Length: 287
Ligand code: GLN
Image 1 (spheres, protein in one colour):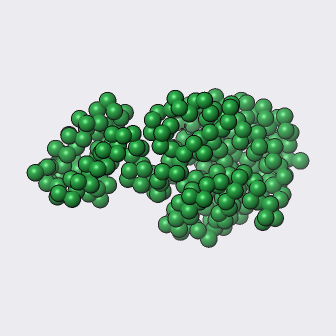
Image 2: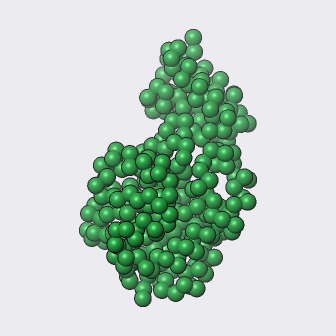
Image 3: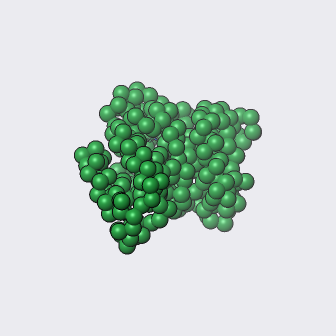
């Protein structure tokens, strides 16, 4: 007979020294199996688990022991107050990226309608939060991964914003050429892959072994996608429009240099994340 208390204790002991947050991981997994919240676990410590619950829980703890991120195990991650389905093949949304969404929401007039482009949509975290909080706007969401777009579409549907989004499969701006939006985009956002190739293997195992390289690898210096985006954006974004990019912890200054070299970028700003890291570079486009 295994109680909630015992199940948590055993898993915590197994995960000790293997993950950064052993008890929390066990709690999150058990909440998922029992379909309850954390408070329930605390209030019902002596509840006895069924055989099926124990089996499902242990299988998930085994995956966690192999390094699989909790979010892939339970199939979800919260972002901007919304739950996103995630699975292997899409990057797990990071809290830092909320800064990018906030930057956009703080720069717009809530009652206006905007055409937005999101390059590298992944699970749809940025696209869907913008679609949700900017009623009347339309988002063109591009990803080179078909699987990511399928997951993003599923997330858009569960958040009731599918009709405000056009999903486009392809690399960077390429799919936009077929729909004739040159010069008509008001806001361009992107959290592109930005990890220098050689650094990927040094990231924590949850990231390096289980998250898609396609969403992480920014080329030799990590800046490949910024070069492309900054060079090409003025063709699609109208004069007076906005561009907001998430950047790696030491990349903001170099991304700004790229904007200055290209010209047409004004009012360049850096926004820091909650850890004080320069996380978002935004600018107006003017020509
Ligand atoms: N923020 C992610 C990480 O540090 C990287 C995401 C990206 O390359 N855009 O793991």
